[in-house]
Length: 329
Image 1: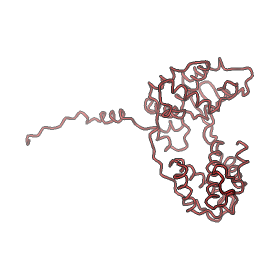
Image 2: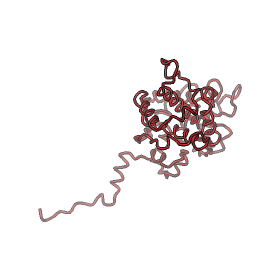
Image 3: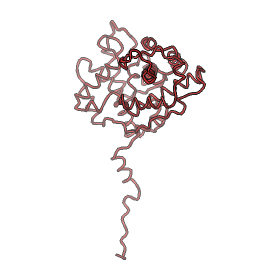
């Protein structure tokens, strides 16, 4: 975890973050989300209780290092709903963003109540999660995917092609791709570290193996800072999340696709959708491939398009049954 997270945290928050990382095994990205969510809640609480100095200080500059158990003992369920209202009205948070904050708050108060034993009652125990609308994930069609691959060019085209072909074929997360080590590649298998630091095996098809082999032939060897990292940046160090996102956005634009509609994560949606739609992959198998903890998450990727719905109706054995003419009319 980055040092600044600890520097800006009161002791009680540091203890919670340590517990979630070392005992619960949450990833560093998840720990950061907990920190950001609880920091904004603590800032709101200080404003709500009118205990900020100076009174005109900007919200983003409010320190939280002085937040202690005495202040947290005053929190009620009404305060928590006031915070949710504030995030909706003043911060324009979507339902999904507020739902994440509810999860962070509930985890935090559960910890200080049931683990640290600092509270007698948990004010967040009855806090409800905002209802979020489940939307079908956006994805590229086969033709759009091939168009995206066809526009890859330039100095790092072999690397970029390998990155995109892995996204489109394996459905891995951005952090998983960036974290790939050469030592994790064994013939047609790749071991990656997924969400929650969970390890899983990804199987590589012919396109992925060829793309990786081609990249390894041109991958820099001298002066490399992280010799085990598969994908390297111009500075010969492990490529960053931001760099991969910029690469994907660049080619999405060059392919004539909408960068507001498609992103790095949409390539993961694409892989999942194409495997399910064209490969007739069982949902449980797809869950394993994508590294989903819950089958409910995987079900979002198994949407059916209009063509499939039409084919399903037309495949009914009674679809050709003709109406019976009646003598009564």
